[in-house]
Amino acid sequence: MPNSSSQFLLLAFSDRRELQLLHFWLFLGISLAALLGNGLILSAVACDQHLHTPRDFFLLHLSLTDLGCICTTVPKAMHNSLWGTREISYAGCTAQVFLLMFLMSVEFSLLTIMCYDRYVAICKPLHYGTLLGSRACAHMAAAAWASGFLNALLHTANTFSLPLCQGNALGQFFCEIPHILKLSCSHSKLRELGLLLLSVSLALGCFLFIVYSYVQIFRALLRIPSDEGRHKAFSTCLPHLAVVSLFLSTATFAYLKPPSISSPSLDLALSVLYSVVSPALNPLIYNLRYQELRDAIRKMMTGCFSGAIKCLFSGV
Image (cartoon, rainbow, N blue to C red; front, side):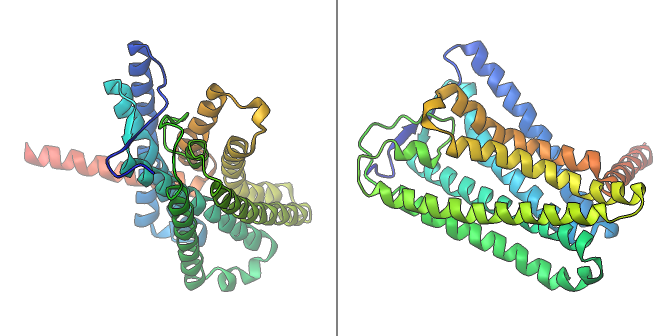
């Protein structure tokens, strides 16, 4: 097994210097957009009293995980593209695997909880305050973060306990468990495959719960007599449904696609979609469909702009 001074070689986007710089600027733009969008959501939810609801509480946590995903994979990829290198240290690779597994596990748990929030709000509105009180929300959020930490710890510890004897070149622009397993020649990697199977089973359970919840939600929507009422209720589910669809479709296909259709270019495109593009698009999706959030962000930005103008003229 490599020691702490060993290095892995990440996948280079291109051998041409012009394309390397293009990748750098592209990732810089995406990461800045993600930081701005998620930062605005965090600030608006934290500062606006009207957004202190269970849905906004979980949206705040979702924005934290999106920021974490961007900060885990993108900075090293930008550094390598800018300087034309491929190396990542053994410790850095371990940190990437742990953080990405941790944050993705938490994000999926949060999306499942947010689905439960919409289910209770539409199907059991009279019990909303009881089932989703502040204490219950805090417990569910804590469970999501704790389960994600435990899942990431088990996978990371087991993956890096395997002897790696087939080189150190990873076919990915960040450290990812499936690509590290390809470097192992040990039969004990079956243990990691077993852990992955367990994680997939738990994820499948969450997915089935989401499907069941939305079936019940759509049945409840059909019972609403007015078109305006149905549209208003459905609009509260649309951002979550879009985020879940984007996250699950890209991540599931990236990890569970048949080997027969696997290729370096397809693997790269899918990994960029679920680890970079999805966290950057989530704030945009919620801002487009969530009127209260747009109003809070507009109010906050107007207040900041007005304060800056006052400070400027008071200084003059």
